[in-house]
Image (cartoon, rainbow, N blue to C red; front, side):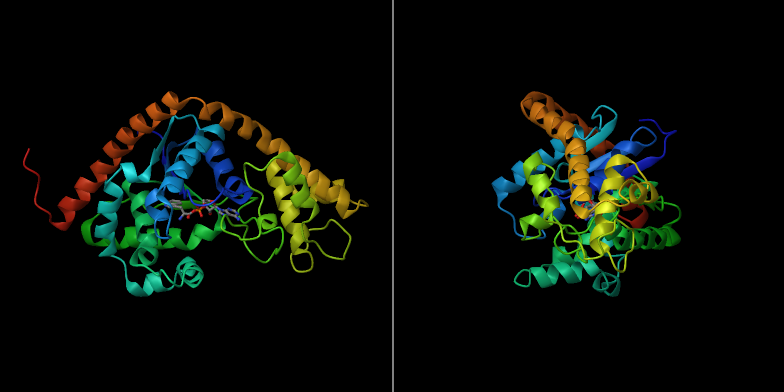
Length: 335
Ligand code: TYM
């Protein structure tokens, strides 16, 4: 592997249908950064079972997600795209890091609080230690940078704390990673309630635009998006959170700035603006959807990527794991 490039790690859960929040907040940046870094992109299926899953459905979604990474533009020959569950080092390092993480730290995680109120009948230990597994994902590959949406920042900060704590005891074992948050699209909000994050698990299908939605559905969802009575396309977070969200989506899809967008729609009504945002999203997603349909026909190609990349990821991850095991005092393996 090329050691002159810095390392990037990121991952997504294969639960629910991916939204444009996942795409604009994360996946799109992954593609932009992929030439510059040595990249590891994981389908984090170990994280998915912190919430009850239908096994056949999880397997299907995980494969779709892995295929989607490629359809979005990540070259699997240059980027290591793999299933987290195929690399046992993730779970092994997570155990060790559990012993370097405090209950108080995990208690403060807002995602744990959110998820435990949503799944009150299944507040399992995995849900609680979820961020430690995430730290293991990142630290195993000695990642310098981790591109994520704003909602994952708290987990990233904890990862940095765990890495620094471990390093302060055992020397420089882990690279302390930096988050990478995109300038636009880092927090896409629900189309039905702009105070809430757009989420795969939202029960209202009109709240989220899914990556596999067809053009008519996308246009319809934008037409129904909640706005305000100001009647001006202006970036005013306090008074016009719905319009701000639509501007963010438009900018993230077209590369235009907020100011350019305000100028473009000055004097125009919300109807025109919503149509333009819908069209920009359709234009962004159409090539990805076409590529996805193509790739899904090519089972052998995807199978080969799954196998090769799991081996590559295991090789890199095991190197770090062995170093950590030695540092904490586990006996050396007899060859
Ligand atoms: P997940 O699967 O919830 O989301 C995947 C990525 O999408 C981003 N994202 C958003 N960005 C902008 N607006 C939104 N509405 C929006 N919703 C989601 C997320 O910030 C994330 O970058 N715990 C992680 C997965 C994970 C991971 C890791 C990420 C596991 N290990 C190591 C980075 C590094 C998660 O559940 O993401």
